[in-house]
Length: 129
Image (cartoon, rainbow, N blue to C red; front, side, top):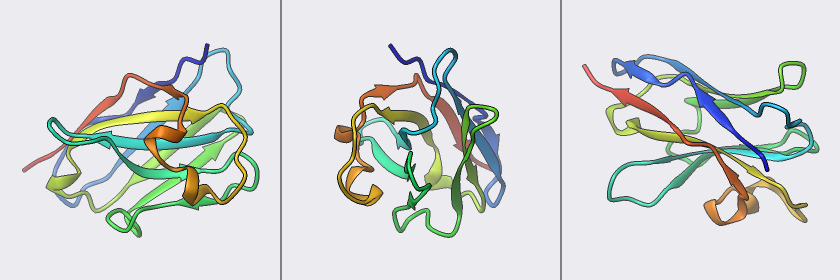
């Protein structure tokens, strides 16, 4: 069983920055697709970024492109989501997820809730003045 642990959420003003971290005690994240997703009450969970386990390729939907950046630190066994220029509409619970199965195409095709196998409990990000 893979336990994913998110951290780094909090309250930030519009235009501010936050960096979320995803760790997995006792499990090596290297080689797996890792994704960041978010959800607000009453809405479906949506992808905000994913990173490939093989070539490091990444995917961002248009609404975060240029503002969010996903990265992997293999030495620290951690995946980060750097969030800049935050907007009020970025307020959500952010989840880290891992795909345990092989992929057969680009990361774009696999950055979706149904493609992930393990989930963290989430960390709340609130963007408010």
